[in-house]
Length: 349
Length: 260
Image (cartoon, rainbow over all chains, first blue to last red):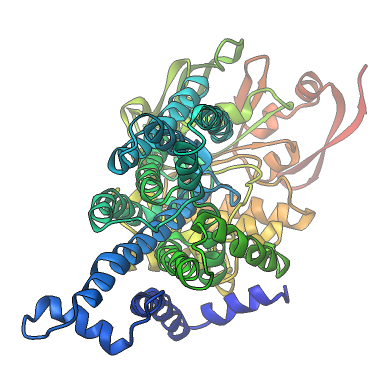
């Protein structure tokens, strides 16, 4: 009872005032980092330069150099927005899945969405090689993989949780094998590096148009999850209990799976496969605000966005070569997660 | 009119034999009906058919005359509260949040609980003397306290019928009797209760009717005195028992030895 994480939670849940400070901090974090992210990079900008460049877009009388305008609007903005969207998407989907499946070890790709999307991307790169097609194919195959999992599980036994998760694992490994097959047959000098690079996850080549495209399913999916977040609490108590409390569990679980899959597939379609965010951010959020999804989901959105933006900033600034973000999330995320685990796992599940 | 009625109920899991057949049970206002029977005889399954956690293979369940087949899960939950046996916890929700979940059937699909729901929750917490625990994670409570949390939740749900699946299992000696007293008190408030139990003694303490289950059906449904007899206990549990009167209107049933 005397572990640090518990005392953190107690400190923040003690009074309404402290709750508000925490809420405010969670909201402020991604906003502050959002502005800082415009300044850093290979071509550093001062706060003033960033502000004038942003204002110049809306006020014609302010003039800035075309270079600044390109850096802020065409290079950094899409990348920053993508990091925020993808981070928030993966984190919130992870939290919703953990609640739905009554299991804190679940991550958003448990039903096969990432493997499906990976296959979609690999086959598109292999056959066509146009980025927009790759994105659409990744998104579609992510949805198809989860649909296969869902309907196989339903046909076996009325969407029981364990059956669903096991089917997901089988479908995921099936698509992983197909990815390997694509790699195996790919031209090792042109296509193979592209596939491998996509699978490692990166936001380096994201464009504004892509961000706009994926923001629709992500925002819609997150909004529905937020509306249903009270029911997610009830669902996390188990199927029988939530049914006895009047929840149509199968319908609710279907809607949540649909939203999470849309969100994750959209995110993965522009970022490639990024692990860890969907697993650790829900845990860290639970440690801060407790398991009540009414506070948990907004917290995961803020922290997920902050975390991925932070990692992406490191990816494009700290090292002389750009390291794929999927590698960094695990290299930074895994030790951090283990550190938290040592701090007293039982207190915040 | 009876508040809950089970008529000609038959249940079987897919592709297997019937768990019970042609079972009838009538529950009136304020009844405490205790279902006794050996392990695996289908007590819990029957109970779960009453609020449609399981779908009957044949027969019907009526709440105040209306067939539950024609009700949605929410309407059933407004009428019937349920405390499962052996809750498995995953997330450390606060006691308050757990009890607040009892308000779910009264909310529209897209709503979250409001102020009135919070007030009802606070009252339920006070009723069971656990208001001071409201900000604690329910997973950190003792078994007895957790049982009170579930009672508070089911009372916040404001049903007229309670289904309690072995409400005294996992509880110590004292908490068992306290739970039985809560059941008696709730029935005096007009709530009808159907419970399962492994203890004939508990039926003597709290029930006004006992339904004895054996061989896919009820051997009989009557007052505890008429059902819990040495012959019946021998038949159902395969052991010799002694039934002793220890005070005015208070009997106990003591196991003596097994019959081979």
